[in-house]
Image (cartoon, rainbow, N blue to C red):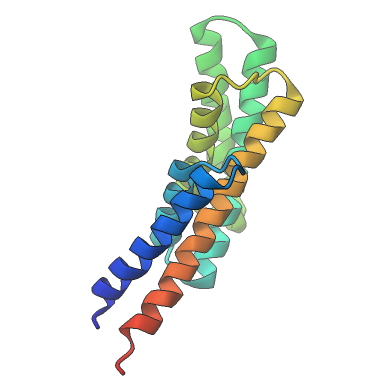
Length: 164
């Protein structure tokens, strides 16, 4: 079977498992974050190296977003102040790319955006360190698991695509 068909079957089967894991397991994992990470795995080149790049940079993005949200909550202020804090945090996010391990900027942005989305859309008390840490943990776990699903789907597709 050709690789596209093998990928379609592999990803489709695992997407059902991933959806159940997020919606049916009670773990609180976020299916949308898992799928973002899954795409990021392929976007960063796949294989073990893509997994490493994607996961490390996702976690960098989660960390920067978590600190940013806490600062926004504790400093308070107008939209202008909040915008300035976010702007500075994104400078920090991107400057991290001076370290080769943090050089996959798009994956860092996916982690940052996923964290901000989850916290703001679910009304996490971003000024409460425990609530914010729990939220960052949920997003981090969803992103890491999404990358693992990417690796598994790649390997399964490779098996399916091999001639009999």
